[in-house]
Length: 508
Image 1 (cartoon, rainbow, N blue to C red):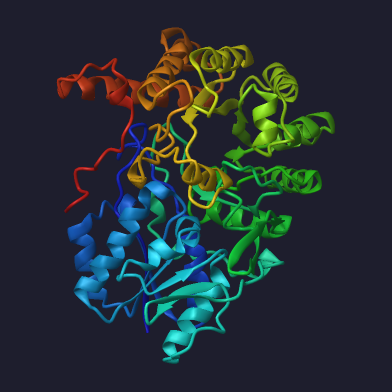
Image 2 (image 1 turned 180 degrees about the vertical axis):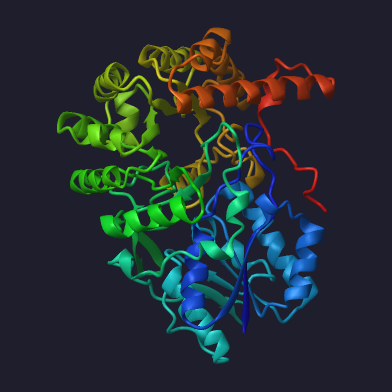
């Protein structure tokens, strides 16, 4: 039996181009490894770094002749391309079994299974569920009700099997099958996540259940009660030694000197942070790394001296979700652990002690009570923080979140075309601003920060990593500007900086 796991051709954000690096989709090497270790012939196909468009992917599927095609998606905006992959596989061979997984499809079971090209949905954490499912397919099972964590249709009726418990010990998973991916094609940018960027993760899930966030959903404890899916947030981590070994393999075997940790919350456990940093320092690697960090945990580790060790171990780039300078909104969104005072204190210490670290924060704008005054209040707060880059994202109700359910119930959504769910294009108005007005204010917010003074300050920074990040941003802005001129567009209009971009090879 042959299994083909695919990350399909996709459009990309305007800020990321073919000249910038595409990074390893972590699901592929993990799923590939557990299937291979259990005797299955498996091929991993990541179309983006290989520049494989739909015509080329069709040839790959025809030549490989897989019995099973698997595709996953955590982001709503790429869901259509994932489903297009299943349709393509069925058009080539109707007997090919198509399996989808990931946060998006786990949270839209009925809509997903309406698509006749989809045979099974793997819900939640995928490794053990996918393995058991394909073992059942190989055995030509007719009843899959004993396979935990899947959904499928029988005679037009959706069957949702019992929930699969999360993997308690992540160390039991086999080492990810990086050897099945084109590792030399990842992290090729001279400036972004340089040199040799690649993704990695040590933990899964989150300890919080923010109502707008989908990151915690896929790795949460799950129960089905009276047909309703109940999720409880949970955070797990690999052992330090396991993670150090993975870093060492990526560094020595694949020449990856910049690690992009894609953990939803990298720094939950202070003891883990401390031990990992100490052991990585002893390796004496020439290494930079990026992580998504929680402000409250950063503040804790700044005060207990663990953060010093993280920096010595190579932490060069951090991103924190500040979200709003609005305590009530944070509390209503279940982000109780944040406050403007904590954020301000944390970043003041970081700016003073670690000026060489590239500090990135995210803000959510266009919330239900947003007006122009409140929007400028967020911008003013961002400017006062003096970070390297504040990103302003319109509030987007991702399927599965509490916000999604509320938006559907109250009819706030103005489009259900998931290609617009890119966290750059507003998909719903506030009480006081329509989507066009929100978009214009986001553009004005960006102009407040991305300017000549900002670029000069960064381009002449003494720290190489930080300098490279500013150079990359300068090149991005210049490319967008000249692309707009070439297309006879006004380069200063907001439309230049939103909507996904289609690669030249996308259809080929």
